[in-house]
Image (cartoon, rainbow, N blue to C red; front, side, top):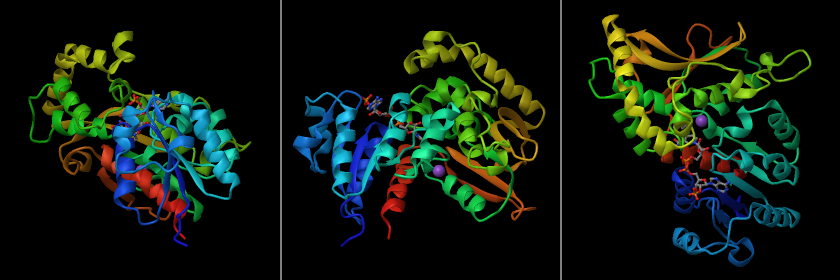
Length: 370
Ligand SMILES: NC(=O)C1=CN([C@@H]2O[C@H](COP(=O)(O)OP(=O)(O)OC[C@H]3O[C@@H](n4cnc5c(N)ncnc54)[C@H](OP(=O)(O)O)[C@@H]3O)[C@@H](O)[C@H]2O)C=CC1
Ligand SMILES: N[C@@H](CC=O)C(=O)O
Ligand code: NA
């Protein structure tokens, strides 16, 4: 029997990343799978009627579907398949908190969960602890929540689970912030406006659905929380996780403190408001250039000093964060006992639909490889 021949896949959310996930599965059917549910936020292909969806025409079929989305029906279908002895996976490609809150029940029912959605792993500790507890029955894999397809979570787990001790993790964790500052505060100079570069990041699929969630630092704070929770030395004496209130406990510099509520809650409104900030950002760029520096948005999990923070900092034009990054690159440096003087470094595109989907699909392969 081919491994994974009976992997039953439900895909929830087929926006930028989700569409690529489905396309990559279809294009590379090496292990075999069956699509048993596909949903947007409004409609779905009904699992009972369309069990084993035709992969070729899935988008047209979903757009034409008159079945309103019903995630409890999706769960029941997967649960039934698990009872029949099949392996099932719920892939959450949304950024929804409500969907994230379904994970403990899904895992307890023996359904595996794979997702690039950071909400469940970076919010209040209660949900995260419930997920860890429930993972005795089903597995959860979330490689794309940090560094998109780059092997960040798997690398950290490998370090920790082979007994290495993490001293500090630092780097550029946001594809959007990287793209923005690589272009806005380039070593060779730039005069493009801040808002026009943010528009470019959004058009290329790097930003969160609302770019405000990138520019307020929350996306980086979420990623730092996700990593911090994997490091045993950051647990307290009772074995509890630090950052009880998740990303909101992280010391974070927001770049948009003055944004009106309408812009914070709506991506299009945010983009309309942003040009008002161009002069302020240009001033910061000029000041950094006068000092022979560039601006970069960085994150640190300092295990030794128990500090987790996300901030905008100035770096000399010769620093690797200034010279070696391009596009939406992330660079993540693991300083550990074993990798003492020379850190283990992972670098590459840290945002984009295709690379994020690759992280999701590689998690699926981890589930089904022999
Ligand atoms: N883009 C990137 O580079 C990266 C993204 N991620 C994460 O990947 C996830 C997806 O991002 P992206 O594809 O860019 O986002 P999009 O906004 O393009 O897509 C989100 C999808 O989720 C659907 N959806 C939203 N809420 C629900 C719900 N309650 N139930 C069912 N479906 C729902 C939307 O439906 P509808 O189309 O009807 O609105 C849409 O299909 C996010 O969590 C993001 O943080 C992680 C790493 C990198
Ligand atoms: N908006 C995020 C997407 C990946 O997590 C980013 O820019 O890094
Ligand atoms: Na990753």
